Length: 530
Image 1 (tube, rainbow, N blue to C red):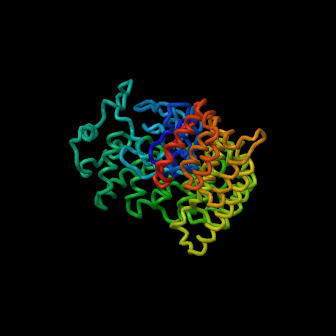
Image 2 (image 1 turned 135 degrees about the vertical axis):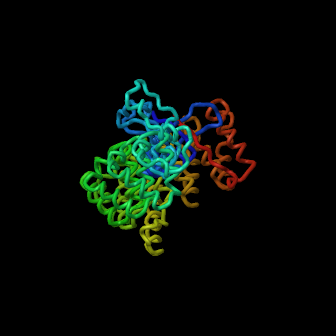
Image 3 (image 1 turned 60 degrees about the vertical axis):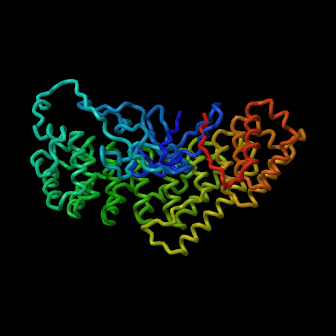
């Protein structure tokens, strides 16, 4: 089962906005969990893993920190854009990192690359929450590096490394000749990272020349990958280019690696379009292999957020006619959210059309619901810096998003009771109210007041359901005064009935608490559903 870790970063996956584990970007937090004021059964939503990024956005998609295989994944919240992490114990020291699902040190719920001992740039590695998240930068390397056997090489650990470990060396000038050894050591890597950021160009070059012969091996080294990332971020242009050339013909392989995928994500944030084009060309025949991989999905998400939209066409075209299938996948749902945020109107419209066609299937799914929430939130990053898109094109995209959002809300209103009583769809119905326009909100209130076969209003059928009662509570909290009055008037004749059930008592308490303050002061709490 997924648990939400609220890093509060972001909420859930859905927004996952950045995924953490292997992602460079943040994953979204889960916006769907309900944390209840009652220590009562909670409904915890599973959020899809987030985003290539580590950020988690609030109710985007599950952005998780899960990695696929982890049998028990804990999706970070992906609010609408899922992301996540593994639950295997990281092994340090001389023990090899085993499975692909191994966790990144040591934060178990993050896929951010940026968690090097020092660095925190937003790269995700494991799955973290999906839908849209924020970067998780808390995965550091373990502070101890136990080693069971003392090999001769351990005995020969250089005096320089010992001095670095004991904080006796404060300058890069003193470590020449030992750069590779330091790069592969937890403390040594941390030292190099902190010093290289502010080093002089000549110091950066001296260190670079020493590590470059083994740079390819360092890219997928548990500690060395962070030093390579520093050179993509803070190195000279010549350093970036030499490292980018090393990736040539190996991009796909690195994208599937636990640490290599983080290097690719950081590279994408800093390299020229010429090298981005190289990455796109090497991944274009393996889009879905990457999407379904716990590391590779973060690279695909990062491509979408860093490449000019035309360059991302290789991903968009792969997803045509695949939306219903991919939205139901832990990582696929994150990638779709990234496309909705970053792609141009002409790329997004066909995706929205497919989402609308299968929306009834998506809302009741543990991952698909994040994709629908994402559309309802209508939160594209219209500022996408690569597109230099005109106001005209960004307005056109907003208009298209609004159009599909309205179509989706209208379609879901036809079965409001069925969806409100579903673990996953109930979250979506709340978003319909939260993000609907006044006409739609009033229409929803009208549906809740309508009489059912036994003469009782529909809302009463919702009050004693484990999921629908939260929908009623949230609608009460988010209504304007007139709507709230209307709903309370409908419920008042049934107060005695409500008092007899646990959920009904929650509704009464909610009716009382909302009478004292207007909805403007209402701050939504996260809820966990289990």
